[in-house]
Image (cartoon, rainbow, N blue to C red; front, side, top):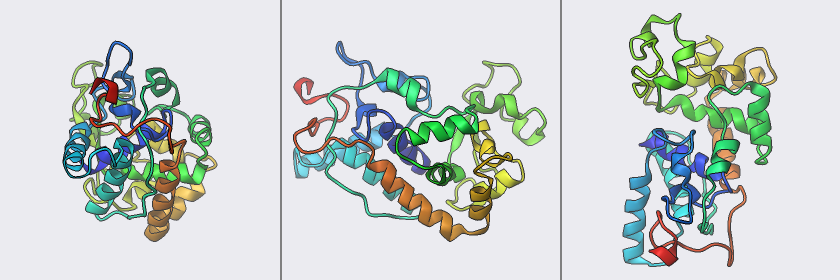
Length: 260
């Protein structure tokens, strides 16, 4: 679940800030982000957060927010697969609403060109270097055939996992890093330099544009990547948090307290 827990934090923070809005289920007054196009049949790890929350509530009820759990889980997930670690800033509170529209508009898309990716990250206060470092989380994890079908019909290895007909095998999975799919390392960037990025949004980071030099640096210097990834995760985790008397500390992560 390491890749999924890191991604869950990312998909939470890019919509309304790091407020656990992604965890809320549909109700008569809430339209869940879980069903938004970038999240549906894609984002995982909800039950891990729910399990952690349940255990925390039994020990210290009403203290640790779901948003903080998501942030700490992402850090622990990285460390569990020998990736970098960092000190997680704590004190986030949970939203009392979600934004499906925000999830549709603010999250990066797998076919986005470089300038659009830079724009999306800049809107959240993150630099192009942060973006490249955070994209390095694709050194682990898998993606669905539907996200890369258009890119692979010159690659026999990839074609076996993803039939050419749209809709056929859409949910078949393939590793984002074909070489070391279960190791948090800098091989992702070496793949990009060999034009082996699986997603369009991966390969555009090394395609004759402004981020080529960063990819090249990370491909040669794993420690620089690890350090920058950790720093970027801290900055991402600080996007528009609810603090003080804002929001609430949900007792159950999937519903607001009034309905719990």
